[in-house]
Picture 1 (cartoon, rainbow, N blue to C red):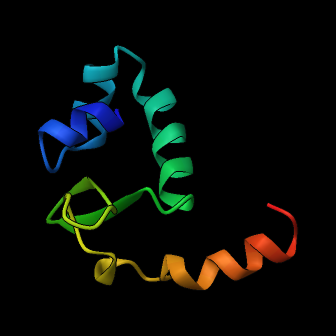
Picture 2 (picture 1 turned 45 degrees about the horizontal axis):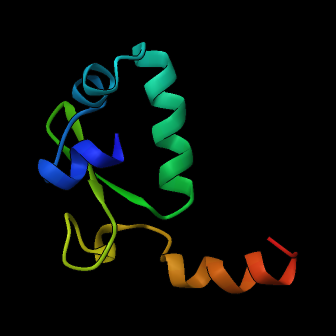
Length: 81
């Protein structure tokens, strides 16, 4: 799914599931984990949610995130993650 987002800047969960050849439910779980790890940003537009990479220069800016990834890193390091 990440490889698909490197070629197409924004895709829905259904499109990413299709690209990966997995069920929508499987893709949804993976996308949630990637978002939690600050690798993806989600932007809602009408009824659709578009996933984009959070890397500088690719996809969306982290400004659109509700919780900045920079705030998560010290907590992860403190707990040994």
